[in-house]
Image (tube, rainbow, N blue to C red; front, top):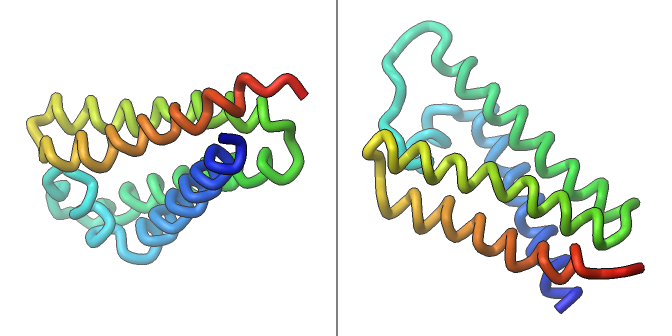
Length: 126
């Protein structure tokens, strides 16, 4: 289970970094897949969307750094804490009456995978 959990952690980290890069490079395209309608047009909308990209890249780098230099238990703890991000995204999309499919199918599934991967790592004693 350890290798499965580490593989999921790596996939999550690389995936969120890739999304962050997409938000920086093409924020409108990235936003279309999120599950909410595009924000109103304005001169600063793309810059606001790029903020999410910076945060996504940072979140992924934290997991990668912990995988490289931290014990498995700390990687598991980070995954558990960072699972709040897709749970929050899912909740906000549902509250805004956005795409139910994207809320559960992307964000909810991501949260579940992160939690399932985190538990065995968090339970490691060494």
